[in-house]
Length: 240
Image 1 (cartoon, rainbow, N blue to C red):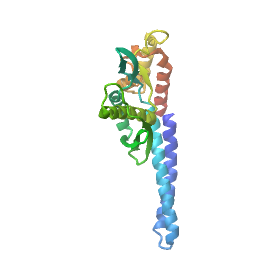
Image 2 (cartoon, rainbow, N blue to C red; image 1 turned 90 degrees about the vertical axis):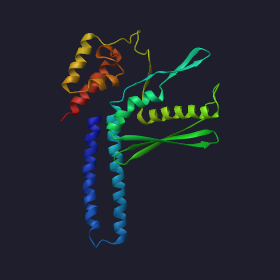
Image 3 (tube, helix red, strand yellow; image 1 turned 135 degrees about the horizontal axis):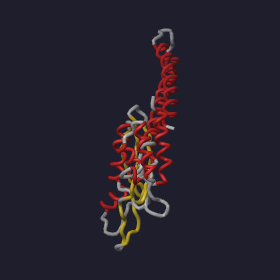
Image 4 (cartoon, rainbow, N blue to C red; image 1 turned 90 degrees about the horizontal axis):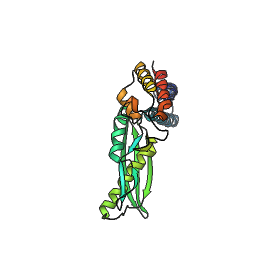
């Protein structure tokens, strides 16, 4: 899918560049009146914005194909009992930062008080110039034992995790999701097949295993075998 999006993006970029060339020639022509030139410049700005958004979406598609599932390593304990698990912001950052850098993405966060709590925003920017912003409004997390500052900090941490997940469609999983009950690892033959197929397309083993949240090929969950094979097939198609 990522290679298809990249191909379509390249075609759009070529067409837009051709139109921009026409506008540039018109701008250099002294016989073109000011009003017409202003309309042409407005068209130029629209085309450039479309180019940047196309590049953003193509890069996002390629990034999402490589993002791993995030293991829920954070624990919420109430009265000594485990109530729930969550993906910590540091675990999310470790998983996504190198890939976001590779594909040209960066994030910035902001917040402002509202009558209902705090409005948080996260802007995802691409190196080619396009950016998109998502927002969420949360109450301050006034849990037991938290002072006012800690309550704001807890809400901020949650908002950052949630907003990153909204932008990147992140998937989280429990630490024990790949245990028994039909969720065991691939067979030895399947592990060997994945290793060999990945080598054929010159894939990075460490990144591949991180994407699948598996320490080794032999520990890849059986439920992810078809997904892994599809990823390799897409990588093969994308090779020149």
